[in-house]
Image 1 (tube, rainbow, N blue to C red):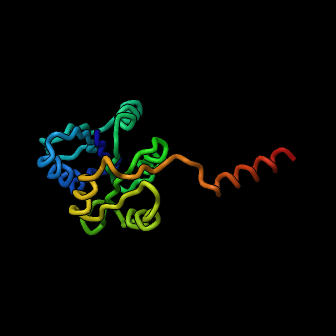
Image 2 (image 1 turned 180 degrees about the vertical axis):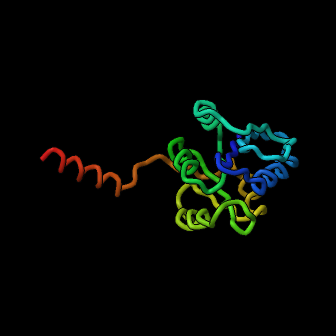
Image 3 (image 1 turned 45 degrees about the vertical axis):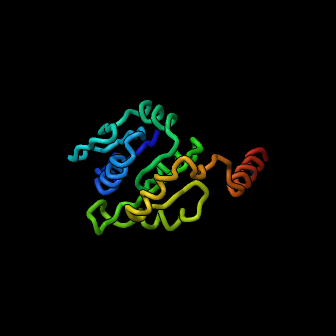
Length: 158
């Protein structure tokens, strides 16, 4: 199952309409999207405006890939569940957010294992076409966090 999430602040119709367009051609795919009160109707995927934390966890647990905006919560979730993540940043130029901070998030995560960037519809389609082959984020602890944890443990035990 492909799980699409737009976060809970604003609808993200550019992403949702692109996934809808892809889903129309790939009708055998099971797609569930959290749409954040989008005013658009979507024929080729199951949609839910908002999800409770348990509903969200259930859908993520069933997903093979997460597609979403470049929100940190979604990126962290992909890491926690060891899933590939396709992110499309919201853009100020399209009135999708208050600023372009998601572009900065994409710049920071570009090249990170399991984070796949779709800055446009064609790249999104290409990534969705091979979504079952995408590398997952992984849930390993980065060396810097291990070193910090060890240091703090040593200082606390003094």
